[in-house]
Image 1 (cartoon, rainbow, N blue to C red):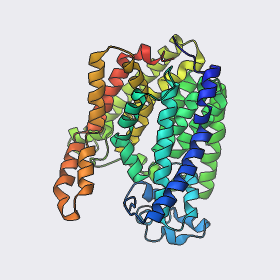
Image 2 (cartoon, one colour):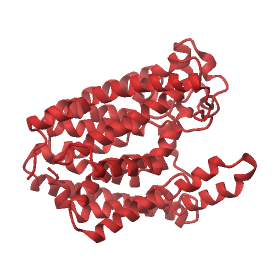
Image 3 (tube, rainbow, N blue to C red):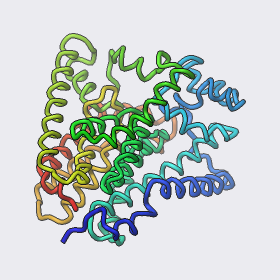
Image 4 (tube, rainbow, N blue to C red):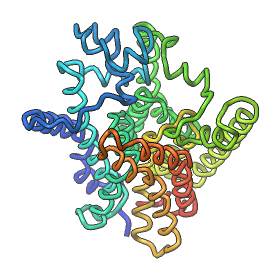
Length: 418
């Protein structure tokens, strides 16, 4: 027996799990927990070096809030200077409440608890969306266990990266799309794209199916971002676009996408063979995605169910995007939950084995990263090198590839979850 996602039962069950409620709980919970943490006097959540701190605080925005001292001496000053800004336009907007804090430590501790609660709420929301039973059972407990031990998630949480926010927004867009609220769904995709670009891949199915309401919502959100960020910070000063246009000359272990896998296999430097191989594979992959989406739309007459292919697209863009850091792979969460629910209700033993192998590979660096952070400073050298060597084998890339293969093998079940 199946239950359609847009039934009244789901409307009642999921209403507290929609985006406004999840964000409200996350803000309230983070304020409470960060204050308890502050009173306790603990220092274990302080960070000094992360990709998020290269984007926050921004020089101009810190001066706008009359807090230039937040910027002075920061990692953002070292990396961005007074000219450049990092990530998407809405990344800067969503960071603005953090300028209300007096120190970067206070801001990032609040952000830690906010992202943690938001992630857990998102897992619960999407888990309920993709199964009939809504009660919390051992399957859900085990899914939370898997989700919390995901290396991409823990890396994103440790660095306070906004990929977790993107996941929450996209899952909310999926839910609204399933209820024929295409305009708001498209708008949320526009918000997620404005945070850090990768969810923009979901514009492709909207275009192919000519969903004008969703496209209108997307454009109404994205166009003002493009204009306003040009007026205030300037697209020519975008450090993210600078990296994309100039390319990467070398690879580093943290990057786990196709571009860096090819860089490692071709000797670790760009140009020549690297450019040809990467562009060829990218064109083939995009062509396959377009063809797959076209076939999917033709075989899926019910428009409200076409969102079910979105998690697969998010997983694929993690593999294909240049400069794909390990924390990007938190965007695999919707696909992992989809497959998990399918395999929990099937007897596909071999698929379960491959799914488990994929999850293990994705989190392979985790125990080494934990040991590295627990050891005294003078003892971390060898473990750090060992961790980098493991990451240089691209376990997140190959683990994700296995999970995507399991999804494709179970595509009929994947596209008819409800």
